[in-house]
Amino acid sequence: MTGKPFASALISLSLVSLACTSRIVYEAAAEPATVGTVNINTASVAELEMLPGVGQKTAESIVEHREQHGTFRRVEHLMLVQGVSESRFVEIRPLITH
Image 1 (cartoon, one colour):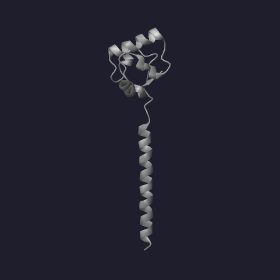
Image 2 (cartoon, rainbow, N blue to C red; image 1 turned 90 degrees about the horizontal axis):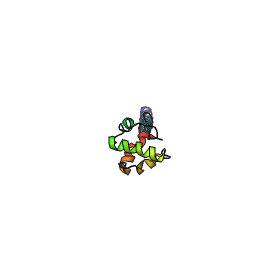
Image 3 (cartoon, helix red, strand yellow; image 1 turned 180 degrees about the vertical axis):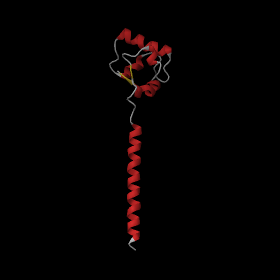
Image 4 (cartoon, helix red, strand yellow; image 1 turned 90 degrees about the vertical axis):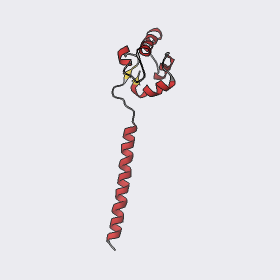
């Protein structure tokens, strides 16, 4: 009879350990990428084109807007540029900074 409580405790401890490990891995994967971000206030047309869904025309519009109106005070202001929709912004948001 002494083996059953030990086995139950060992199984319970293993399950708790597995649950904690899974949560740590999930939380680490959920963090947004900060390495390799593109600064929308200093990036060239070529650098802006590296963003998903941003082609040459949109990249040129971003640079032109920046030259005419000054730097972007918030990354959300990028949506003021022709060619940057809300859905496009949501897609590239983790990849940009200002």
